[in-house]
Length: 337
Image (cartoon, rainbow, N blue to C red; front, top):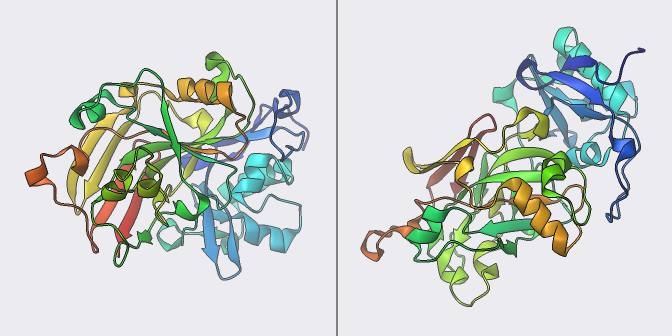
């Protein structure tokens, strides 16, 4: 189907057109070890990882349901990207995926579409190159812990074993900690890496955004000057249910809240970040290479249990249910067990 690369060719998230855009082939070489296929990128996508009887695979949200791209590829054999990681890396035939999305909006076979309420969600990514986290990135959160706002981003990390998904559980029973705490956070996933990325170009390197929760064990976190132990508990880095492509998101103006057992505990807007997403990308890439698929937790706001007076700190426990809600990105549900 001959057409301009910027022509809308299909239906993406909630009726937004999935669009092929030029640019991936013109991107400057990056330090990442996973080379991107030189082809146009799709825009207007809201994606996730579906778990079906055949295993995990790429799902794309459409107005008719979630398109099981991996299932469609098994039937059609068109060389489609079958995982979120492959899509981010530009692997697979993106033009064929765009055409399939156009069909999904109108006449795709029902066997390739899953109603949202029937979707089983998996980890959006299982093996990102890095998971980078930013601490004390809201002034009110720094203040509630008695800290001054940082002059530079405070960085720490999680490991891949911390990755988790929507409608998941985190085990706290039998773990060597008791001070369990929530942290609602905006998560960004890089679509293109590099070094010394200019701040005014930084958001062009983002693939998409998601709702996240930097779930923390505060007693482990405070055992040393390093926060690692309290931040790397298995399953403590959930994000989802959707990864929304960056072209659909005004990342500097998103309402965000955390609800625990139906009670709102945190509420803010991303415009109140000390360091914006663009500043975080520029700062990180000044010091080390960013790569396509890197996951970045951008920091939490005030309202954490850690910020309560000590006599009012009631730590989370098995059975508690946390919901991170970010405007236009969706509600991330996690239950403690």
